[in-house]
Length: 407
Image (cartoon, helix red, strand yellow):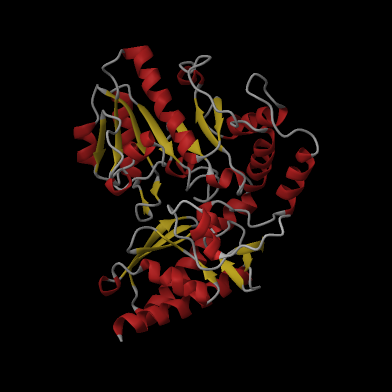
């Protein structure tokens, strides 16, 4: 370990300023608790933005990684490897998918999905079938292609010219979908629950309409489950709860519980358009990443974990309702499973970041989903004790922010 001392100021001295990290630096974690450089302990209601869904240093996941570290770290994709094959087998046996492509992140998984959709449409219907339809306020990654497909203009400002043949429609708007999806559409991409866009669940009717329209117009339906997938919805993937099967599904974040890994899942016939040389990834399918992800899916895909998500959802929603009875801080609490958003009352609009900053003072890590929504994405297996303590600290946070805002 390097002996050089570093602190939050070091970030400003050596890092590109595209992030604005918290004033404290976590240095260790276990379960749903973090400890910073000063020894202060925090309850983690963020899980690395829905990533460490089995908590920090989960013993089984840690053990699996240690065992693989002593075997093999990396191979180029001129070879395959056993961990990648085991993970692909597990994913195809537990989902609609027949074929899997591995990447390193959600953005890369979505990039692969969008490229595959255009290639598939080109192969089957020619060059004119290339329009991609997505939703306003959506978020699909930070590559130029995925950030353009995402429906938040603030993320594309200054990066023109952007990829073309993209159309953004209102989320959960059936008429808008009907008007936009036509025979020139090659794909529709949607988050079953919009995460960065405000923690907004899709209605079952909306996803069913997208499925119907894609089937009618020979377009592919892509579910971006980077944030809501791998158990966070209370099912292994959210499409299972909705009863709507996509043609392509993307996963990342919780898939590796913090180890970088992403996956694109699809059918045999669609995957056939990615012939040798059409797409690739140096680290995609890395043995270390796939070993971890295989263990994560094994642990998450159990009645105990998935059933526990629904119970914890109820506990958090009930806790937020109790807090709101006293402080009237929220106009809406919504979400699915353990992705929950509390939209702020009108007089607190724009103050979501204030809640994050004050929560840190009280020893709690939370998130925002835009300027008006406080977001909660704790571990799927957070203990009752930590859940209760976290809600207690959040109530203290709410009381302080509300008092400052309302006098």
